[in-house]
Length: 170
Image 1 (cartoon, rainbow, N blue to C red):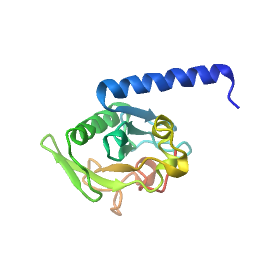
Image 2: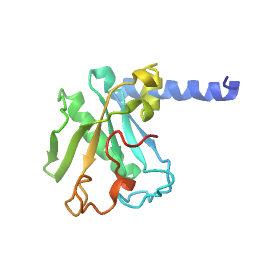
Image 3: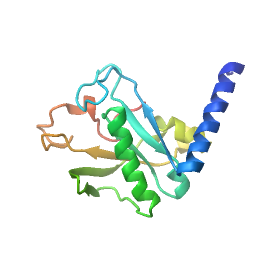
């Protein structure tokens, strides 16, 4: 059982998140479990895992939530805001799709996150879904600045900075 102080704090957090989603249609939750450099995409502590961000609110628009792993707070927020804006504008993302932008031609690959119940704790709390019946999510996989993807043998930072979908948890 949760103590009254924790319950009160959680109630305030739930209210704040709901207000953000009402005002902006989605919110971004950032999780910083490891000792990673804020804006680095390849300097993560293996013990704590990579940082990640995810949306809360897209499920209410009829779309899976979005997750990005291994980027700092500002980069995660920027990527998720941009792609969530596409979804809120009516775009349905499809696993395997390559998203490119005129100012970011390297792109993002949309992949299904196989274990969203082990990652999207805030989204599941918001939608009152148990982890075993989690809201669905897509992981947005980014290309390293040297042009390699996480599935390439020459990927410089390996799974420590951007693990493959379904192989990591919060």
